[in-house]
Length: 292
Image 1 (cartoon, rainbow, N blue to C red):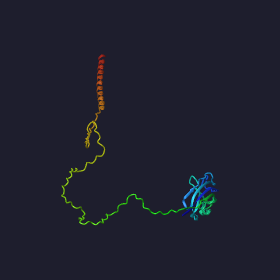
Image 2: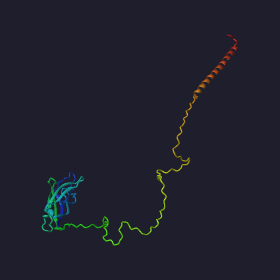
Image 3: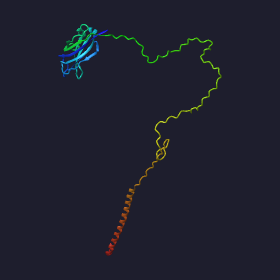
Image 4: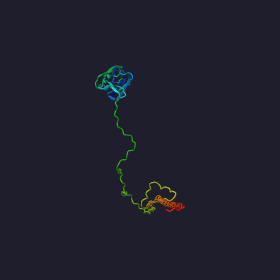
């Protein structure tokens, strides 16, 4: 049989706590845990206005085994909320023996108001005071869980048949019975005709079936000449004819012009000389026929 009491704990307030924030105002809350059960951790509300003198009035409830009074403790840890992560302010450790000792008999206890000093973790330096109240309920007895006998699991499927050969029959063979053989006795009736032969099927053709064709389908025929299959015809070598040299007609024209000019000039010069000579001789003849 297990015996325990219900602990009604109220965290009222704290006073003169150490200011651990450098700039911002402290916003303090408390975590409370039983050392006998780490899963019993509970938290108060956060006081965002009290600073170093927070007020909570938070009611918490725990189930405390009577046997835990010998070595168990109630641990209260104060924190301040910060943007870069919460920071510890101080802690209080209360022996459960002290709390359970406030009641006698099996009845409930009276409400108790107490104050404890808040200490710095690890060093134990004082960092203020915390005010709490608590009250224990009457003694509660709970039956310890009994070991249940193992029962067969519910049958989902029928059990498998036993492995091996079936057991031989225990009955005695009858008298004047025929010999027991492994094969059935042969029939004494005349054998009937043989059953008709099954119909013959033509054997499948030899060879492999043509493989499936892959790729794109053949394009539709184009207008004009029909499409040519196979390799394209070999390209015929192209004969490059040498270019004919152009005659310099311009030079020949200039030469012919010069030559014609010279001949024409000579002709004109000869004609002009003949006229001059004829006139000269006529003049002298008209002058009286002087002979020089």
